[in-house]
Amino acid sequence: MTAYADALRNHNVAVDVTIAPGLAHNILLEPIAMERVKDIAGAMLCFAVFMAASLVLLAMSVRAALIVF
Image (cartoon, rainbow, N blue to C red; front, side, top):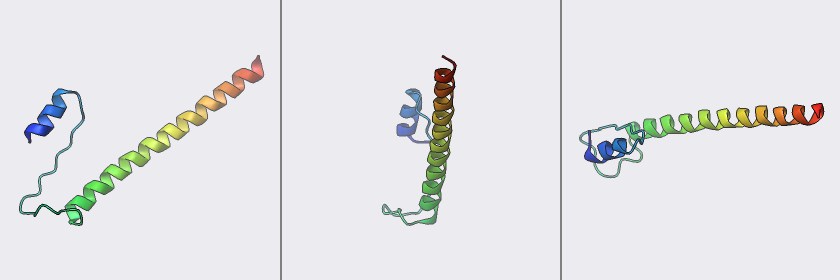
């Protein structure tokens, strides 16, 4: 792994490193880079759905509490 990734891990940051040897500096449109972007976007979408569901449940709880009192 890289020293940068190790330093981040030492500060409790979740790090996932992909090594793609033989690629030039401009890798944005390379298939491996696009796959990693898809992975990140998928994780962000899952988190957003989880947060939205949590907010809905919280709102329902607050509404139920207001109705009871």
